[in-house]
Length: 168
Image (cartoon, rainbow, N blue to C red; front, side, top):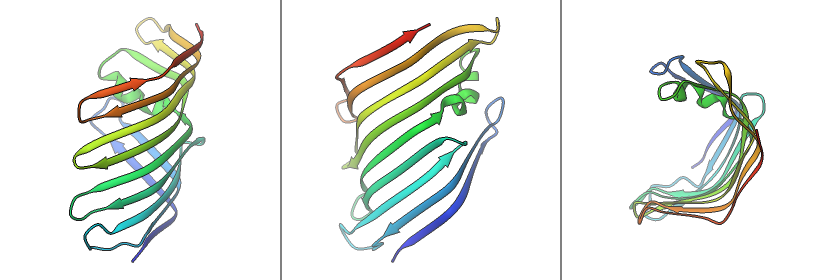
């Protein structure tokens, strides 16, 4: 069997944050092929969506559900505005995310109760304001993580390089 969602919309409202966190995704397209309930049968997954007006996320990979859950996928994120995290930061710090975008190329694998994530990422044009003084707290043009590898089993994180351009 298969499942498809074409040009859908996803709305997530978290009323436990102050202010409430609302994340809206448009142009949600999901395709799951070869759905089966047999042992070790893999289903192919393709998905894409737009968060805000500019944040594109795409996923491509496969998953199996029996006898245990396993997932292998590539995730591409571009131009995702990080201010969607602002309501969550308000609970822990008096800061405001005024600007900034996230980009990432990730490979994600989950099997045998182990999560592994590798890839590269960057945050561009970051601008954080201290809310109490309404003054700039931190800015940079770009922070790039060249290559990282994380494994939950063993609690390891390896980073090959971090570059910070134009810290203000």
